Length: 143
Image (cartoon, rainbow, N blue to C red):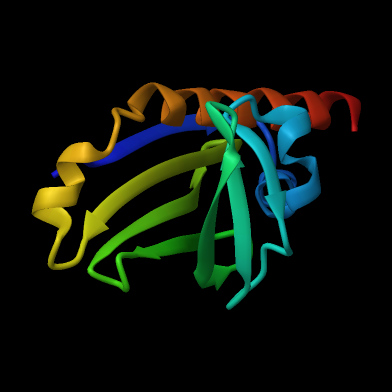
C-alpha cells in the first residue's frame, strides 16, 4: 500500500504557513504541483483540486479535520467509499520556525487492489513542501 510523506523546517511563522495552505486561489502562484483549487479551504468544505501533472482532472476532496495553524486533513472517497485517501497537513514548532509535515494514506476495502494503481507521488510531495518553504520564507522576509 503506498504512503507518501515528507517534512521540512520553515523559517517563518505558523500564521504565514497556514495562510498559504488555506488560500485556495493562491496555490498555483507558489506551488508548482497544483494547477488550481476551487472552493474555500475551511472545516467541512468540499473543494476541487487539480494537479499540475493532470490539470484537466479535478479531484473532489472534503476538509474533514481542521484546526487552524495546527493541522488539517483532506479526504477523497472513490468507488463509493470503497477506496479512500487522506492527505494530512501538520504544523509544529521547531526552534524559531515551523515544522511542516505532509502525508497521504490510502484505505478502504479496495485499497489493496486500487492502491497498486496509484502513481509514485513522493517527488510531488517533496516539491510541495519545498515550494511552501520558499513561499513562506520569502513572505517572511518581504511581507
